[in-house]
Image 1 (tube, helix red, strand yellow):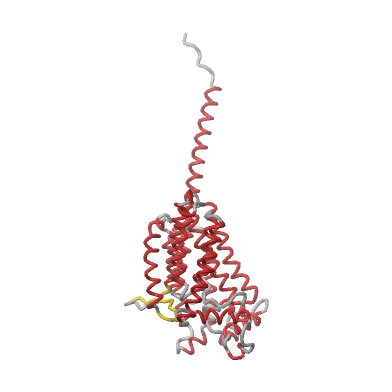
Image 2 (image 1 turned 90 degrees about the vertical axis):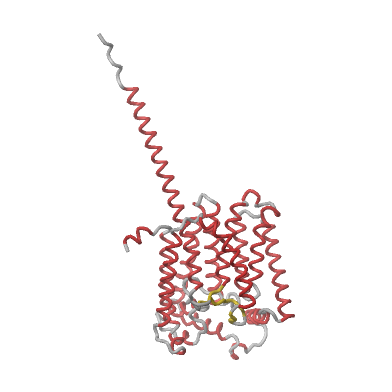
Length: 413
């Protein structure tokens, strides 16, 4: 264990945030899966042990990835992005259907299902970090600078949107933030935003006409959020999940009812995944919810510090891009839980019960820590070189001073 700790590098605050989020995840998942375990005829600790194994493997992934020099990910970015595109196409047409959308594919032999959009997000930001770093000299030019970074974003979002619109919108928004940080012209970013709105309108119309896609689900969620339609929708159970989320948050108060003491957790659908934040507030109160939000913001702040200290553009864009998408997803999930935005289906990173989603998030965190690790080493090497040069200058100064003050030798008789 001591050797493992000695080999662990990177930002210590980010490591601490990840460990605390993992502990919160275990408490929240164990509390919210009791009724699920009963319905599935499982032991009460079944899902806790499963989540413990998933998080344990996730921490090992973070440790393994953070020991790789982040410059190596520039080479892997192209390969991963090229692989992600056919996987998205396959998922769109042949993926496992969940909530009327094809989002998952099942790997043969090992019987593991994973969401290809998670892999596509990771691959896209690695690819964008590479292109943005290479195009900094011409990034203001539309054809030479902006178009090469626009096309990957447009293609990826277009393939994700029909089955998972919330992820596509989140991805497009976070890419716009990364473009702004990468010195892309604001008018070019506005063009991308306008193209996204037009693309969504076209996709919605196409889905309504052909029946391919989830236009009815999107329409129902927006109407439910703004309160248009049947006034008795809650009584009929059409907005049961949102209603139970509100009850869970209202019952929590300031300090909550304590671990495992929330009654709403047995009625809240997906209280262990999409609506786990509402369950956390019910048991730990607004104070507990604020702590979770603070942890994600702390992670973002430390990543921004890494971005500012990184001497190379690729590492800087890589760290800030991956951290922004992770934290933005967390904020969007929390906004859904407190009913600030329509239901999206996005999970709370490193807290919601999951498998492959936690592992892909772990890879992203490992890459951020890899940038931090090698930035710290570069800064340390620079300080050592500077100290060595200063010592050398001091020695030379002392030698010159001694030479000047040394009395001349007496002439020989």
